[in-house]
Image (cartoon, rainbow, N blue to C red; front, side, top):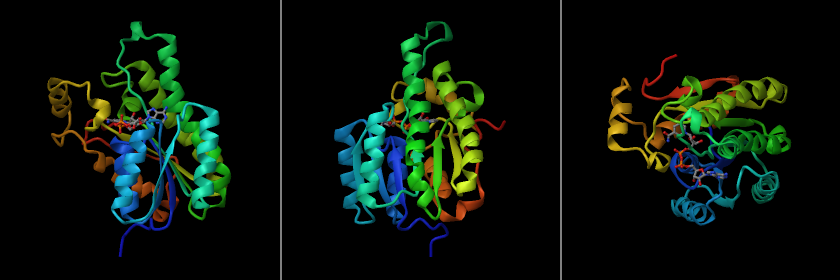
Length: 252
Ligand SMILES: NC(=O)c1ccc[n+]([C@@H]2O[C@H](COP(=O)([O-])OP(=O)(O)OC[C@H]3O[C@@H](n4cnc5c(N)ncnc54)[C@H](O)[C@@H]3O)[C@@H](O)[C@H]2O)c1
């Protein structure tokens, strides 16, 4: 018997074509959840969902969607609800990284980062609220970052602001949605080896490792495990919380 009850629950996972979102969708499907893999990379999300369906567990349903636009988000949530008939979990994983110096950031780049990472997360969750209200165990999970805790870790202020903002909306939404039993929690990964880190050099990885008490860079599955806990029925008494999964990179 599994310790966490995930079977037959329906999740929207954004940013699911690769990296942490994909690892989360995989862990969910392996544990019997039905998962809508949402990503702006249409070809890749189709292929990723295909891989998960080949595992022979529960169903993976690909939806191409840019979470920074209202119309695509509304269409995506409707497509998932029409397909599965329910939505129990929203996991906001879609995100983009930037690394400009404070004095170099252009307004358009700032708006783009905030538009995807923060506004995208908020409006995906908001659009799903009518469905979450009907769920027996409704969950919203925001994939923030240690950058939101520390004010950036070699990345730009726009990224840090978007992730700090996610921590703020996690607590605010938890407060406002508590009366509907919808829990809202955040997971804060430290540096994790995924395609988003492709631009990092081995020297930069070595530096990040040296600042980590467990002496290694995180893997996507390390983060997915925390997300799956929040998605489970058992996590019913945790809301407004932030789970730091970073190998001790940051201890507050
Ligand atoms: N990898 C890390 O070290 C790390 C650390 C802390 C937080 N995070 C956060 O975790 C999340 C996932 O990161 P990852 O490392 O898996 O990155 P990744 O680049 O591997 O995956 C991100 C996915 O999001 C998708 N995406 C980007 N913009 C989108 C949009 N507008 N609409 C829909 N999909 C979009 C991409 O196509 C991609 O598939 C991000 O929010 C990131 O900020 C990552």
